[in-house]
Length: 244
Ligand SMILES: C[S@@+](CC[C@H](N)C(=O)[O-])C[C@H]1O[C@@H](n2cnc3c(N)ncnc32)[C@H](O)[C@@H]1O
Image (cartoon, rainbow, N blue to C red; front, side):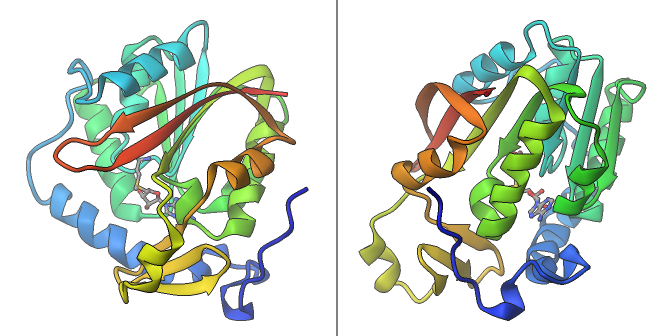
């Protein structure tokens, strides 16, 4: 059974405006995506992604699927690659205006804008979607970078929104030993295994055990693989999931 993690009241998701909890997250991503927007470089959805493991995951996810939702869609490149694989209705949601602007421009440039919609919003925007209405979902480097209570809310909402047997692909950062955080003043501990980085981003150092605990009411794990990251010793964790 998951026990809600105690978060200091200022960080709690009890305010009406969920965006308020993410001011530093928004500032971080506005800066990053602003830099990308100021260049002419846009993702070409015909191009293979640089990680074959992700390509394979997206092929599994999009097989026989008509519609898909990507929460925390960033530049939109993952979603546009799904359109390349045959998705007809793709929805991207992101808290960063600049990410959404970049995704819209990239979609247009790829002539995919009749099949995509990109929306600025945080977790509350999921409430607008109807039950059992979409075939597949994507949560890449998102669940462990938002408030734990919001992460659980997102999993619950994805379970509600996806059709029976709907597929979800989740990518998580690596889980590191706790002592690495104790020795490192880049990470400020907020509550159990939950940190705020100096960058302004949240990081939930989610163990396998904890992830299984929070996912088990909503999704079955079909497959799990580690994705070695280029030019580092680190991995991302990729979970293939099916709605219970
Ligand atoms: C690490 S990036 C991953 C982007 C994309 N999923 C990918 O894999 O390329 C995290 C993204 O999540 C978005 N994000 C962070 N917190 C969010 C929230 N509470 N609601 C919606 N999006 C959020 C950020 O703006 C950013 O675009």
